[in-house]
Image: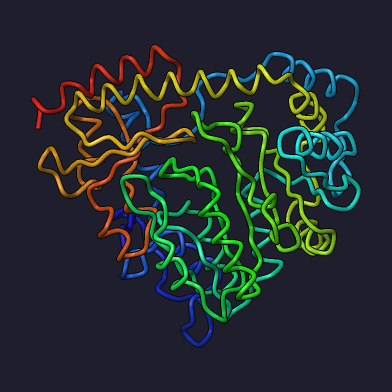
Length: 417
């Protein structure tokens, strides 16, 4: 496993009676934060950010924008604060935002969740994912994710005491082999946790793949939890919500958030929609995590969801242009470049440069050329880490001039190795 535990950190090997790991240790193990001797490490994001700061490198590691989203959304939040919207929101979210989420689902996908009973506002998509898994998963259950997987998935699966099973996403298109996917299901599969568009690979799942997931979830009576935070950030291919496929709606919870679409990641406004009985179960857990949050930001995001179509096509087109700037620099550096169909991220293969260990290169890259990236193996279990050990992930959700500078720096890599 691609542990990122730092040498100076330490934690007792077990703090639970009887020697079994404590919930925090299961969470840390699930997110690849415990070394084999039980020492607690920092996340790869923290390590790479620290390296970027100490070397003055351009940080293309963590996926957050370096500029704010639309001014009218910011102004709506400021107005809401000035108007006194500063106390608890209702536990399920303010009515205006729940209605805006419902209207958004209808407008883009022809889905019509009831804002009163089938939509829940959460503290970012992260809380929606955590509350969903904690609501339905228990020890002995299996949760199936695609691999590489976003680190919070492993953490929450571990915290819930469930077994984390993965189905590999394979280069160059990072789509699953459908027979291998079928083999990953079992009678113990309780939840399929889908991330589409997919972080960290940038894959956008086509209808055929989604239909197979629905078919298998129905066969094994599993719930589908679909993290779709990059839904509006696809390049020339449509985003298809899995809930829109035949047979999916009754077993699917769909999750999204304002952070990626509107570039307000710090506001932590997310939402979840699905059948009333599933949403009620998640709400029961969520109310004892945060109860509610972000009251003035909720009304501002309702304004954002009502922005015209040209806003949505514009953000995708701008991001595609940024992807292409960085891709050119990565190609010039000598990497094998996997052009993504969506998200903030582009993956490269270091093997054409004669490098087989992307974790080692990630630690050297800020000093070599002044750019920081994230090694893909940290998003994997040991077998997956071996399969992806030469892959690096770069984020292109940055200002154009920053990406142009990063591309210039990267182009010098071959000469510096």
